[in-house]
Image (tube, rainbow, N blue to C red; front, side, top):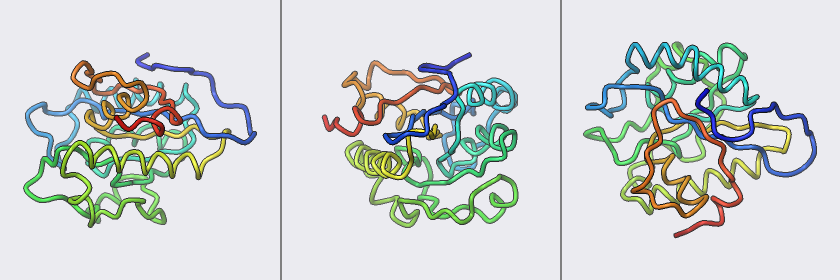
Length: 204
C-alpha cells in the first residue's frame, strides 16, 4: 500500500481543519504530459485496485481533482466505489503548461464519462489558468490560495483528497517542510498526507 500518513478513518466531528491528502495521478506515457493523454493499461489497473483501496483505507470524503484526463481516470474507480462526486478545480492544473494553449474548460463528454460535480464552480476560473501558471511562484500562489479555501470550508470530520500532478505534489511538500524540490520524486499513483497548516505557513 503506497500511502504515507495515518490510514485510520476519521471519527471526530469536532471543529478544526480537515485531514488533507495529495495524490499524483497514475501511470501515463512518460513522453506526453498533454491534457488528453490517458493512463496506460497498467495505470488504469492500478487506479482500479491499488489507488482505490488506498483511498478507501484513508476514509476520503471529498475529492478535488485537476481537469486533466489522467487525473480523472485515476480517481474515478474510487469515486464510483464510494458514490462520491469529483470536484474539478483548476488550482490543481498541470505545471508547466504542456499544451499549445491552456485548456480552460472541461470537455462536455467528461461530464458524461466521469462522476463530476457539475454544480461545483472551480475556485480558480479555468479562463485564468494561463496567468496563474506562468512560473513556479504562480503555481505556489494558486496552490496556497486553494489550500486555504479547503481548510476554511471543510471541518475536522472530513478527509479531503487533492488529485493532481508531480509538480504540484513537489511544491506542496516543499511548502510543508522546506525540503528542496530538486530532491523530490513523487511516483505516479502515490498519495501522502499534507500538513495543511505548515504548507500555508511556508512561502520560501
